[in-house]
Length: 161
Image: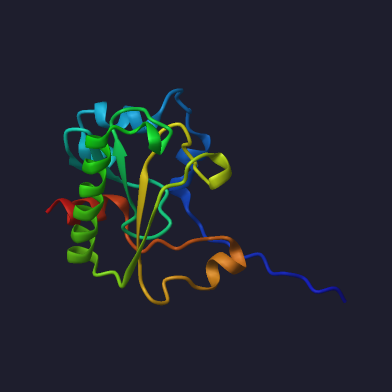
C-alpha cells in the first residue's frame, strides 16, 4: 500500500474576493495613500516622504511595511531625506509593535527584484515582521498554510489607538 498524504483543509472564505476579484492595473503602493480612507487600506502613519501600512497578506500578525510615496524600485535611487525618513518610520513601527504586540524579535528587510522575492518589485518597501518564539508550527510544513491570529481590521484599531 502506498503512503498517502492526508489533505488538510483550512477554510478561508474571505480570500475568494482576492482570488476572483477584479485586478486593477497600476501600483497598489502608489494608489493606497491617494485614497482618503486610511482605515480601509490599513495605513498607520503618514509622513512627508513615506508612509506605513499593514501588509494585506502578512507573513505574521503585525506585519507592516514602510513605503516611500515616490515610485522607486532601487535602493540607490532613494533621496537621502527619503532614506532617513524610511528608517525613522521603521524605528517608530518597531516601537509601536513592541508596545502593542510584545513580540520577542523582528525580521526587517527589503526584497529588491523578483529574484529576491519581491511581490511588488517596482516599488521599494521595507517589511517589518514581528516574531515570537514558536510562532511557526506544523501548518506551513504540512499544508502550506499560515495561521494569522488577528484580523487586519482589529490590528489596525489596536495600532491606531
